[in-house]
Length: 218
Image (cartoon, rainbow, N blue to C red):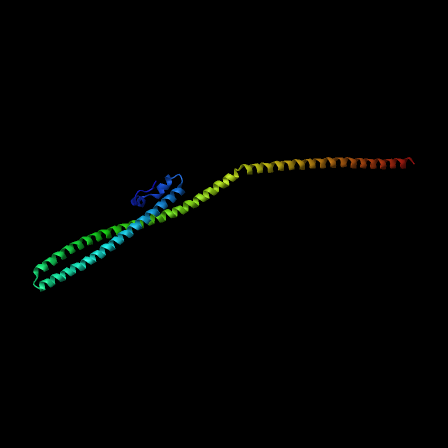
């Protein structure tokens, strides 16, 4: 279905309002640009046909003017030969030819008006098309940026990533537990070693005391 039904619809169209209402602005702007380009081709083709028609009319008018001049010459020749009847007939033919020339001139004036209007419409349509293409670039960049943000957010909430993070936390806790067990064993080992050292100190002190007792008894 066509977005625009006529050239004037495109020229008068509010592209911003059209895009605001669109569910998919990127797709809509592509359709708008495509229709504008197709319409521009049609209008330029129509303009070329009008120009060709004007050239045809101009050539025809020039041919008729030469015929009118020829009838004028014949009328003058007839009068120079005292053939007023032939001169009159020649002038009648000339008048008919000039009447046709006048009609052709009128048609060419209308074609000139049409060409002026088409030229103005082409200019407006080209301006609209340039604006639409500029908007398309902006929309594409915004869409790409928005999609990138969506992809990033989707990855952040991705199950596999969450699962991996949970595994990291699990292994970190497991390592913490293992380190805690090692530290506990180290503490137990140090405590036992300290007890043996204490026993050794006590035994040494008893030996020294016994030595003193023996000395005193002598």
